[in-house]
Each structure stands twice: as C-alpha cells, then as structure tokens.
Image (cartoon, rainbow, N blue to C red):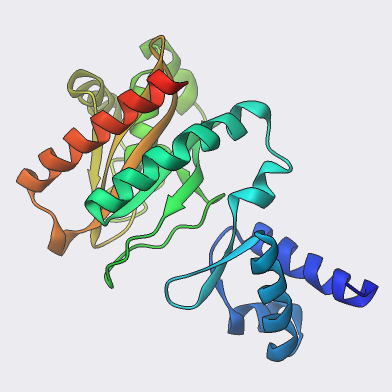
Length: 244
C-alpha cells in the first residue's frame, strides 16, 4: 500500500475499534470524511487480509485476527478454543451466539456470531455491556464467590437499560443466587427492548473464565424453547471448559 492508503486503512481500523460496533459504509464515510469508493476499496483489501469482515445488513466489523494482535494469551486461548464450539452452537440454533468475559463491572464480547435470520440484535466483538443487565454478566458473576458480589457492585451505578432492568442491589443478589442454583442466567428485555438472552458460564475448576450466550428476539422464544437452548448452551460450555 502507498503511505497515504496505509494511513487511511489505519483510520478505518481505528474507527471500527473506537466505535466498538458494526458500521456501515455511509457511517465510515461520515466519520472519516473520505469518499465512498476509497473507503470501499480499502475495506475490500482489509477483508482480503482477514482484518475486517462484512456482516449482515452491509456493515463492517473487526475480525478476531486483528484483535489477537493485542490480546493477552488467556483471551487468545479462549477464542481459539471457543471458535469451533460456538460455530456449532450457532449452526444448531441459528440465533446470535456470543462469548463474553468479565472486565471489571462490564462484559466484553470476545466473539459474536450473528443470526442469519432477518430479525436479530447486532453486537460487535469488543463491545461492552453492563454485567448486571446481561445474561453473560450474570452467568459469570453468579459463579464468583458471593463475598465478592458487594465489592463488585460497590460504587457501580446499576443503570436502567430498559424499563425492565433490575437495579435494586438486593433483587440483583437474589437473581444471581438463582442463576447459580440453576446453572444458567437469563434476562428478558433488560438490556435491549424486544430481545432476551440466556447464558451459561464456562467453568474450569469451578472458576468462571467466560460465558456463552444466545440472544433471541421475543417472537422466536418461549419458556419451552429457552429450556432447549439452555441444554445446548450447557453442552457447549461443558465442552469448552473441558477443552481449556
């Protein structure tokens, strides 16, 4: 690449990393103040090199290849082991499939395999969500020692993501206890309106290193299907923990 093209390419990569979401060609054009043909041409090169991926709806996200350049060994190992397992879960369910880890009081998405169905929630790898309103976060935190929960919640604003979000600390503690007892966590329209999420922790020697989840629009889910998805999640998480 010429140096000017290299600068533009890094501008695209830095923008996608900073925004932490999938972005359309029009959005990248607006942020970078470059013309569409130039950005489109560079995106095709970056896709060819494996650093950017075009996903449903014509939006672009960073791939795991780029993220591995700056990831610690443990995170890279999670993605390496998780990729085939999450791919199998994704193929079996055709729902958005996620791998997340706890970063302080937030969940960081390491992998997101988007549902092929038209109605779906899009969340790019690298995105962050509050732990208290997400199934991923609850699945992980519920399997930490309970004496750590108050420290985790201390000073953290349990913000309402939707009208349904649990923000009372006592109610959240009971929700975490329930999640630990049943071995999975769920949330119904607590992080986003119109969708639910169910998650199972990935345990190694009892320690929750991560969690896997499925995000499902409400028209495609009921309690019976949730039980079916939990079974598949348990199988994936058990294989994941065993492989680690």
